Image 1 (tube, rainbow, N blue to C red):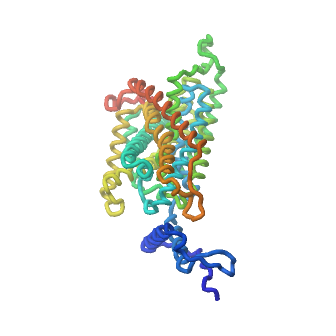
Image 2: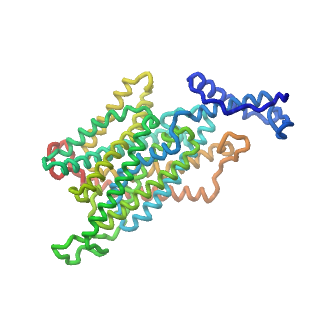
Length: 518
């Protein structure tokens, strides 16, 4: 009998911690051995199958490698579908509500702006995922890191850039948490106004909602709460249908055209929407709002790390961002077409508050915002714990204290700055621009240049080496230039408008009429 018989690689997945660590050691041992010269390996001709194979010792190593690869890939992480729903659940809600206002700033130019920004975000998300895959192929022991985005920065451009990325990522996550909390309180305020005529302090709602959301921050990783992603995504999709339907119903009562309001309207007729011609500053403001919709890219590496098959992340990015665009476009176009430049920061505030359809959309989108808050807070908590050197398994009490402290800071900041429109513009033009338009291209190009000739798409010996052609290089440069110019202009506009924001809740905490979120 042939001593070089084939092995069965389809063995059950390992479950114990000991087997997991043993498999990882085998993986590293095999990886180190593959760097030896090919002449040191003994080949033989398998007469039964007519192909070149390896020596018995090498063949055993390949078997260990297969087992290690299967284990390191994870057996209990997110599936491709689960990762898609996580990205949709994390990115869709607040952007959908604010985009009609972005269109009111940019005019109909907002349509190509939204599509182009989505395409760039998708391209950059794919490149960011590939950069993380390259690092994992070269350094398999980094598979379990809790903050992968800064690690990508460190491996590509050094420790200083790692610190810069940490600051940008955590500012973005913190700001997104603020927006989600304020929007949730805003929607709940409107729902209470629908149910009763009794005055309710808006700032008090922020406080209550914030503390009710605190328990959602105790989940360890995104893979521990897949139901949150599914619920958030489904509620957003259904809410979009109700928002579009209610907007269309109200649009029938508007005798609108594309002229200005100076058309001597009859006082008894419904007001026509005003379509203001965009200028540089208004388009810049729209750019910041649109970019904020893609602020979730800072958690992309975290979601990829929690996947069973992180090499499929490119598919996840393309599908999820396409789905988000298909939800954003109809709501934005409908809101701007019906209400023009007078649309509110939150499209739900523009709809008839006494309509059952409006309140159904209100409840659904609020459900999304609450769950998205839990998704966004998770990497923020993990980063804080990692910075403090806390182990979430052996130091649970300290981790809970850290997470509660972060929640308290978020609530206090929301009470200090209850105007989410200003936060959208400012963060979208600064840290989100860096995380979405600049860092992914910069790190990808630096990584390929740093490990020139060493990076491969897989550990297979015949896998081709990763390189950047001239057209791709030019595309990366163009994307970064767009991000820098748009970010500077919109950032300047956001800073100037920051002086016009509403007073903090500490000044008028118990005042309910005309809540301060607008």
